[in-house]
Amino acid sequence: MDFEPLPEHEAFRKVVREFAQAEITPHVEEWDRTRTFPLEAVGKMGDLGLFGLPFPEEYGGSGSDFTTLCIAIEELARVDQSVAITLEAGVGLGAGPIYQFGTGKQKERWLPDLAAGRALAGFGLTEAEAGSDAGATRTKAELDGDSWVINGTKAFITNSGTPITSLVTVTARTGPDEISALIVPAGAPGFTVEPAYRKMGWHASDTHGLVFEDCRVPVENVLGERGQGFRQFLSILDDGRIAIAALAVGVAQACLDHSVAYATERATFGRPIGGNQAIAFKCADMEIAVNAARLLTYRAAWLKDRDQPFKQAAAVAKVCATEAAVTATREAVQIFGGAGFLDETPVSRHYRDAKMLEIGEGTSEIQRLVISRGLGLPI
Image (cartoon, rainbow, N blue to C red):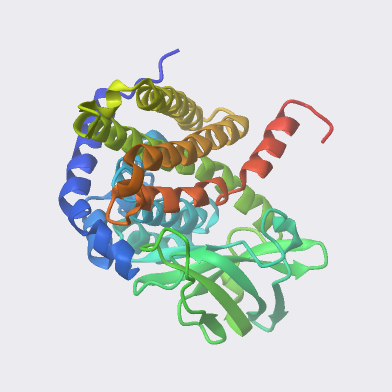
């Protein structure tokens, strides 16, 4: 069984890598330091077609497979995680629910701008008391004539407050035992985007809390079928776990590359530090972890592209890749020593950013729960 990318995948990888080096690398340190959302770069990513990769041409996409999207995310993450998560969330969490579950009218209304990168969308699932336990959603939506009236809050929502955010999809209780997904346009009456969070990492990524106070949206803004919101969003998260794994692979690869270069150039006691087993073996362990994580990630993407069951593979890939990334960033900082503690050093930024990979799209603990259940264990 061969998971080696096709020639067209590798050609695409080269395009994205060159784009990242030219358009992102020169600005990353400033975006991180000033906590600036890279609006211009996002526009250029849209021009390159990155936001439309998995969507059909009729909506402005290119109809590419999921593996292609993972390659784009991996290559962006090698330079900056904030930009990579903006793409991952914009495609998978923002536009993905509209494409997978929306009506024809909803797709025609929202997808062309989302696929072109002219607009972004947020994915409103998490609440202060409903994170890993997403079924504990407290946000409510009640029918009032031809409108849904939404009341509640959401937390940690990516791409929800950018200048080009056009909508958020949110889960809400539409009955005692019923959760539905609703499309809430940006600027809807009663919809407030709270100030951006002060975060440990992902400084150039847009993240806000959301408040709904008697927020009215048309009755036809139910995404797909009423009562199917929880099932829909769990499906979206399965896709997202592969994409986050790809992001983590990019981070781990970047730390390996930086570590090998630094260990070759930096000398102590008259020789490069890479000549010491303590350093060389750290790099060797990173190489092992990166290769394992990449194979698991692209196996999961391969299964999804072939419409085969991939839930278990996605959870396995996410745990392996994200934990590999966190370890790689820590070891890279150790290899860089004092220089790694400076924010001007890329490995310092990767170290701060990487921790979120073990939390977002389902924590490592939740992934292990999914994996255990997939094994048939009564947990």
